[in-house]
Image (cartoon, rainbow, N blue to C red; front, top):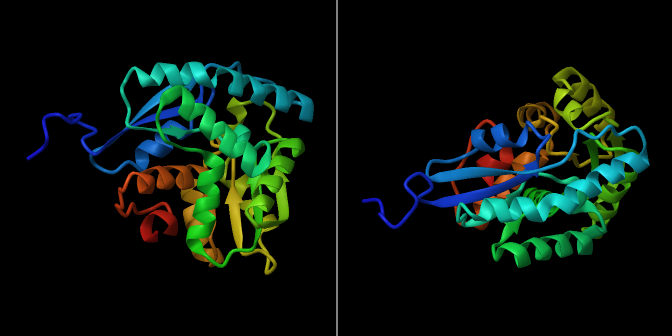
Length: 252
């Protein structure tokens, strides 16, 4: 019998999800992976649809997201969530492993809750597969942000062999990158010298493509939204196998 003291829909866990207001991918991705009894409550980090035309403008746009994150946290806390899930990734890679930990601690200080971040979830996902030393990744970012991702991965002992920054011209254009383009990028990234392929940038829709690619490439292909939601579920003791999104949610 369901405990009446628990949320009627989120009787296992109520997740507060933080994502940029321009992001149209995280919300449906997370809902598609949601097991029964877990609910996702999306709080938008208000940011303009920045035109990213250089390394400098990209960094400025991501800094605006970082500056407005606390307000989004305070907003979602009014729903009394059990746990926070960060539906944005770029700024969680900045400053390497220590920068990621510092960001997580800052959000915990504001909210009082534990949380899953994109960068640390990705590192945990790579470790879950085991045997990965060399990686390649794709992002919607500009080269300056890809450098931050490489540095973060290096802090965890992973060597980046290749990476592709798609240099999307605006935040909303990230969600419009098609499967055909991403399929070509996967071909660029793959090789015998790569143990796993990663995708970062939460507005880049790749959870289904990554799962399919994993089957025909025969190696881990990890989409960041899958990794982040997997991490949030497992951190809360929810071990449900969720099918259709690759080995991570099915096996680990």
